Length: 269
Ligand SMILES: [Fe+2]
Ligand SMILES: [Fe+2]
Image (cartoon, rainbow, N blue to C red; front, side, top):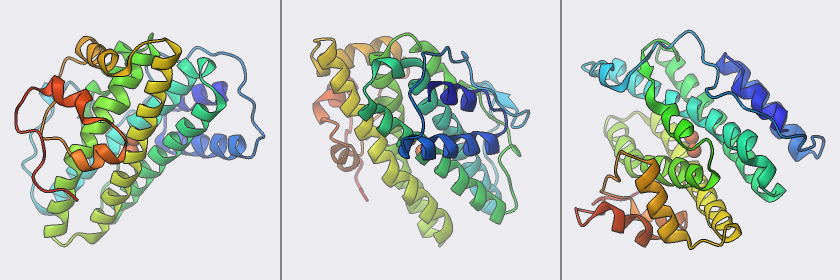
């Protein structure tokens, strides 16, 4: 299974990443795939020739309107989801030997759901006449993976519990916008993603707490100091307390780091 994880990371075409992900998930859940030996994942996952990857500050500003604007937004979310597929497999390949089977079961579900998200977004883009690769994409998304490649606690503190939790804060606003414009198909895709991502944050929290127990460290101060050390962006309120609570992510963890600004988003789904 760890070798399978590396094979996803080394697949260049998104379609191959999806296919390999589906195969591994099926075999693992059928009990037909062993954990296997420790592996060495690549520092960066393979990427297709398109989209062109640009440093965040060189990303073009979105001036498009209507369908083009929708496509640009779907494209940027698809890019995040493609990275999320690789992030799930990178965690399994890099840290899986120190995790119990129960953790691998959950992270494989995360990988499968990220693949589904990418697929749903690709289908919606195709309906609107677009495809992943049509627009430039942000090159900064793998930075957090590189920064935390040697430390499971740091990886869990930053990837699910900062970045994916941030997704919970911003997705309801996107859903509201598409809902206002009557774009029900895009709303359905984003609502599916939103629901699954609550589960990904919950998985992150569960295994972060487990890893803290293993290391005999208190979870909350450990999370705060890892975020300060490994995540330079700072936490950005307002937070979606409702979704974060649903993921069993205690408010005290992140509110103390964010200062006393306007902490909660006014409208919640
Ligand atoms: Fe996702
Ligand atoms: Fe996710």
